Image (cartoon, rainbow, N blue to C red; front, side, top):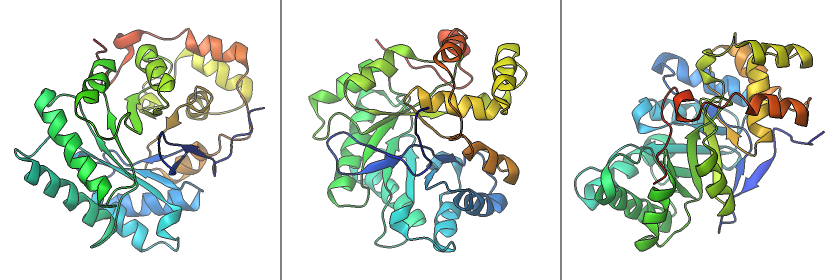
Length: 282
C-alpha cells in the first residue's frame, strides 16, 4: 500500500516550501458557512485551504485561521486572482488586498495563483510580474497558475524570473484527466493540483465508479479522492457538510489496485469530460 498520510507534504520546484498532499476547497462556500467549514476541516486534519478572490470568502478563511487554535505556519493557504486590474500597480494592489484579508496586516499567503489563462498574453504577463513582486516581498511563499495549458506555461519563459510556476491547478478526475498538461507539469516538477476531484457529485451514480467503490467498501467520493492521490495530484475536495468533510479526509487507509486504477483511467473523455474547463495546450 502507498503509505500516504494526511500530514504528507510535497516539494515545490526551486523552493524550500512543501505543500500538503490533500487540500480543502471552499468554492461557493457561503459566507455564513465558510468559517465553520474551515474549522471542521482543520478538526478533521486538513492543513491546506484553497480559496480565491472569485469565491468571495477570503475574509472568512482569514477569520477561520485567526479563531482556530493552530499556528499560522501549520496551515497552507492558497488564493487566486482572476484578471489584471489595468496597470501593474493596480494589479499588485489587488493581490495585496487578498493577502491582508487572509493574513491580516503584515501577513502572508502560502500560494497565490493566476486563476485563469483567459486574460490574454499581456494580461498573463502583468499578473505574473505582480505575483513575482509579491513573492520577492515575502507576502506569498510561492506562486503558480490555474487552468494553464502547455502553451501558456511555455510563453512565460520569455519574461518570468520565476519559472517554472510552482503549481498548476486543473480540473482533474477520471472523466477529465488532461494527460498532456499533466505529463508536461510532472516533467518540469510543477505540482499538479486537482480541483473538482469528486466532479461535484455529478458522477456519484456512475456504474463503473459505484462498482469500484463497493469493492473497497468506500464512498464514491473517497475513491475519487484516493484516485487523485495515486495519480500524483493534490486533490482539493469541497463540501460544507460536516460528515462529508471528515469522510473526504479518510482516504489514507486503503489503496486502489493497479487493475482498478486502469479501470478508472478508462473513463477518460478528454475535454468532453470537463465540467468546468479543459485547457488548450497549443
